[in-house]
Image (cartoon, rainbow, N blue to C red):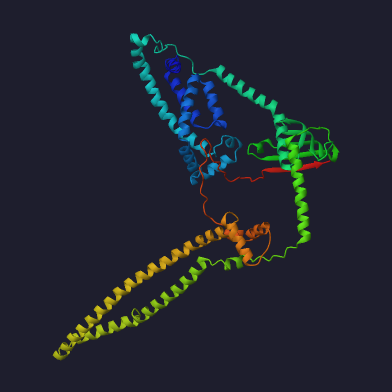
Length: 515
């Protein structure tokens, strides 16, 4: 009940109808679009700058966030379609190469789809709600406030006072909040980076990595790491240590999720140095010790195997030999089609020579001219003979016509046969590719089939030899098939990559000085 009371108070507040409407519509934009990227900061800035009801904004955002969750898959698919429009590819590529636009997360399918849908709904929803709120204030609220029963609630009286459009103190509060969050991040960034280096390096090296301190200066783009130690098996000695590491980072590259180090200096590199930051790491140290023992056992077993048994040399067949033995459908079908086409070509050349040649046509013309000449004669015997010739000529033409009709049907059937062969030849390479991939990939039954092939040819070896075998035939298994896109979970989108106008690596160190 209290919630509805607050809603009605907001509708009857001392704000213009468009201010109330804008509160709801901006809440709609916040609710539908994911809370990430620069667009969220811009919407929040408008909420605090414009003199609108902040509570109504967040209530609207909560409502539309629920609706957005229901329609997430549709908005994500819509964003995926938009990001794959050929007509927009150049614009997207330009945005992708702009650091500020990259921060907007426009290349996320859900962000793009939700943002466009919210923009399309913005004006229609604004004008519709503005009309409804005006109607409510002018008609419905007046009627309810004059009613003795509803008037007791005291929530239907519309305020006559009108508030200003801009809320300067709100803009100041927004900047204060953003500045406070940024300041807090600057305070915790050093321990956060220190924790990240220790955790990431320990996982990569399978050993405990300790860092004394980290100092960052984001405005200068410099980071200094003081005393980095890599633990050894002995508690009192480090396997490896560095006294100081300092480097300058290209902050512009950070906007593109890349790490570009302009200058790096490493001082005080030492091996088997005293452990100055002794620390018991519990499970981590125990895990490292167990892993080291496993590696030692594996090396010992490998040494015994090498001494007790020498594997025979393996000569793997070449990719061409492999494909020649694979009984490919396309190759067999091509040979059969070639033979069939040669047969049809010979057949129609014979028909053309015997029934459709120029000499046959000339014979008909010659007979016709002779009959024309006989028709000019006034001799009765010749005219009677001409009548017999005409009957024979008509009969001959009829037979020829029937023969041509049969040839036409036969020609159409042969055309269908040729089209069928061409279609089979067109589809056969894809079928062969699927067969090769199913046979020689190392997943599922493919691995078993591959081992069957190896042992059938009396090839002995380990699994890494099968991997090298697969690497040899990999170029023949490349396909232009489009991989079916899998829809992401609700609330998440897919990140679409575009061409980089100035390609650069994800990690780059331009200059380094080691001491």
